[in-house]
Amino acid sequence: MPRQVDHDARRRQLTEALLRIASTRGLRAVSMREIAAEAGVSLRVVQYYFTNKQALLESGLTELGARMDHRVKQRAAAAGELTPRGVFAAVLGTILPFDEQSTLDSMAWTAYYTAALTDPALAAVGLTLPNALENFLTARLTAAQQAGDIAPDRDPRTEVAGLLALANGLTSSVLSGQRSHEAATKIIDYHLDRLFGPDAV
Amino acid sequence: MPRQVDHDARRRQLTEALLRIASTRGLRAVSMREIAAEAGVSLRVVQYYFTNKQALLESGLTELGARMDHRVKQRAAAAGELTPRGVFAAVLGTILPFDEQSTLDSMAWTAYYTAALTDPALAAVGLTLPNALENFLTARLTAAQQAGDIAPDRDPRTEVAGLLALANGLTSSVLSGQRSHEAATKIIDYHLDRLFGPDAV
DNA sequence: CGGGAATGGATACAGTCGTATCCTATCAAG
DNA sequence: CTTGATAGGATACGACTGTATCCATTCCCG
Image (cartoon, rainbow over all chains, first blue to last red; front, side):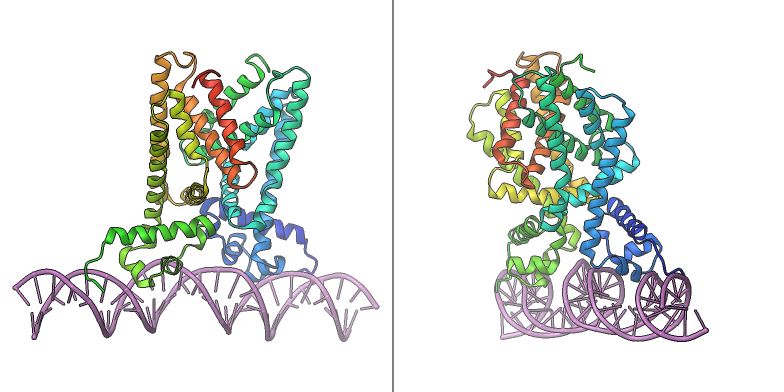
């Protein structure tokens, strides 16, 4: 066995095992031993690379945020030159679970969100991405308004808050099987139509 | 000690203790012994009135649904004669946490919702109320459309789905402290204005 | 080439969990 | 007054939890 080990890779491996458990069986099924089994290592290894279970949990949340961030950028890049409406469609469309992996991540995200309601340490880590998203979109919408792309009587921050809440609520209903991904996308498109006007691209 | 005991009252007492724990410390903090301590009884009593922890959990979810149902009717009654818009304002306003008790219940509801994602038994119990709400509001909106209260090109079910998702998403952000109750109410009112027209009561 | 750090296997510890069992009061009915 | 069901206190069980410790490798560096 080598003495030199890529610690970051090891930690990533364990974090991914953690997220796999959390997204399929819930955060309550996450234990040190379960992570070890899922990652195919011994319990000692999990202890070796993470001082605490708490540290492990926070690492999982950070990884989830990074994945979401990466997905948004990937979507935006695939769409090429983006109109203001295109930016919103990309971001909100990325919040919705649209393939198996993003569905699993949304499950894990929901589990973390709930845990954060009664665990301040997780709340601090978990709120950074949503807040950043809201600020980013608000800035974009304010610029779009100054460019005349949306009506001047709209309040950008209120609009963005509503759209993000809508996307989150729709994610919930898609995860619980109440609605399909397509139905949720239609509802978002419908609201974007109302905001940007029906003939905006 | 009497031999005759009101079993329903006993079960309600225990269920309320369970919900108090779930809403303040999360479902993960709910154990048979914690419920006993919270209710001021012995562990044996909890076992005596509920065969399982699972039965206890399902009872908590049922009670949460009943509370929500009761609150909606109370609000609607307080508003007296209700316009179509009034019905929507009452229902959606009741979904949002608006006082301490409803905030606690929303916390517990969120915890249950997340648990239901990986626990089919809970999902069966938990989805009945949301589905009933959606059907009820869709019927109301369809009637309002036939009466000419909303534009004929709107799809009632899509509108209702969007509004319920919005209310749920706003509830999440209020619970996590991202937004105040007033800000959330404003966003809902704003969307109701767009649906019913700004001069509807 | 030998020693000390890096890595991880094996095991132990004190708690807590859900559940089961044993046993004792209490009270309604015969 | 006695009997038997009801109600609940006390305690035990095995499984699982997070964490700590002991010990054997392996490999880099002097």
